[in-house]
Image (cartoon, rainbow, N blue to C red; front, side, top):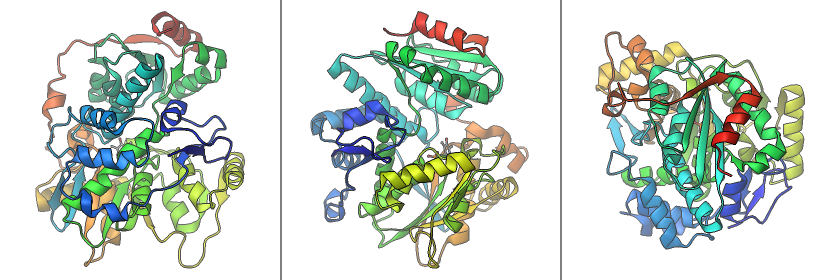
Length: 458
Ligand SMILES: *Cc1c(COP(=O)(O)O)cnc(C)c1O
């Protein structure tokens, strides 16, 4: 399989080069030249373990890692999950939940980042290279990236976060990691300061080149690829229904885009239900064809407090008939005017999708209702997906709701939803009182660059 950019400026890349490139050099996102149709393989994949299924699906997209070596990378990526099925499906009342939070940081990002970390290490070993990863986080992504890269050879990771502005749990998940290749940097400033500082450093091309700076953000193709797997796995766990609906809480459009690819590969998904919180630019787009930026508002589901979704452009590429020129025009118009529009007909914009948003009150009410009626506790992101999913469900078609985080990560929201209830998880309890390591500094580019010069691989 080869990869090309959604904007047409890059094509013919192998998987390994696509992973190394991350964002395409023309500013677009990398996508496979074709979407493989696996319909006639579905029967033979019955009864595979998660890892075996992952290897088979990924091999459809990877031809520059021998399949035996790919299988080892996959196995290694899921040893730290605390459920033998990796992503189990549980029945909750009259719907099903796909639990994606059994990895080391209790969020679904582990599924893809654990794999990406191993792929990076594999490539760097083969090619005798090294990498300094730089990232900015407001919470969840930082810890998942750190857990994916801690202790890896030839990679150092530098994570910027706003001092005192992440939750205590999130901070502990990052700063208790003492591996020599992990550097937590607490900046005096906001998350926006961290992010703009990171962008400034990436745009210093000579620095970027000299220190082989890399990113682990959600545009990396390997992350999307790893996420396709659990849509298939869930279908087998459900007993291979003729069709099913899937509800996905959405921020950067990464998770649900993997579901879109799974459907196009031949998995019999009926509707992909896109669920957002009040930051509803995506829900608006799927209802009207208009993609319009708004102000970011803070919500009970902070990992989805996003207005411009970094993976959306991949989907756009398919809707615009694979024209890099049209994608570039759409994105340029959007950057300039804060809005762009696609024509859509009266049958609806895309029959594969349904979309809606849930506000904080509805999110908390959903947490409470499910807890009271079904004795099952969900985190606020999952609750957004369940709220919207239930709006669109039909009696005949099974509904699968994706659960993206363990509730113990969002203690405050849970106790607002169900007063008196404090959720626990032993992995989070175990962090209490552990030694921590972090560097505090002012939010200044030259300070962070000097730190990377001192501690980066080169
Ligand atoms: C990142 C994240 C999401 C959003 O996933 P996208 O791929 O960005 O749509 C949802 N829930 C949780 C808990 C997350 O960490």
